[in-house]
Length: 322
Image 1 (cartoon, rainbow, N blue to C red):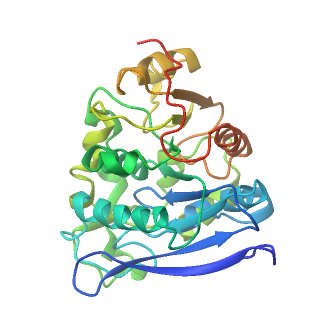
Image 2: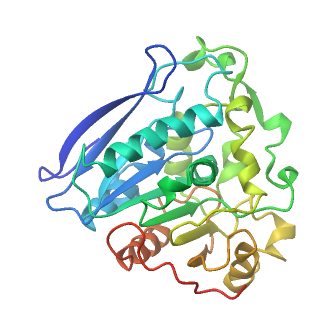
């Protein structure tokens, strides 16, 4: 990955409590950053999701650095460059506890100091962000904000299920041959109709297929419940941003309902957070489930983050009617 010479780099190796296994990632900091964004990729992706190429056109991390944000981009346990695991091992509590350890280290200034710490999740990464807040409300209090991308709450988990014929055991492909049968990935050629839109550039589709990741049902069993379950703890300001043509969370029925327009999305999402939560929503026309390369999505996220107040426990007053 290329980046400006003014960006300092630190590779991280965070123990996850399973033998000597760890999750690995990269902290990239511009001079005097306004804060740090902890980036959580989704199922079937790795941390490369946030840094698509060419970087000056499609990389969310590059855009964040230009906006003077540090990025902490991790491969979740069992994914990407992190230690390979048996598919039963990366349960939601294991993954979230590793994330919480990382957030506590950030809060103590181990890699900073940073005036602001925000979580930015995509898809399953959004579920894990919400699960972490629900399981560790003290962590939520330390965050300045949470960005939930590629996710809209759904009435039923069946609404966001991946068609069975679109996935297979990951070890059927040479690059994942060392994994057990519990790890799955998308069938070659199916990601376009699952997670992209008809307007998606062909070079991004090829790139996504070449860098795709894996997931296990064990990993998502608890976390996916957060897609249908209201949050019962206090959380910092929330931004929900989704592609209006997201076949996973905004199928045709949802485009006539919760994804019809931003007003409908705002009213729908307000039902899943406590009264008093500062909630902002945004639909990105023409885009599907994958949003990190979208210039509009990135600009909206970074503009929203620029309005956050530094420090935990900042202004959390409601801006939506309940």
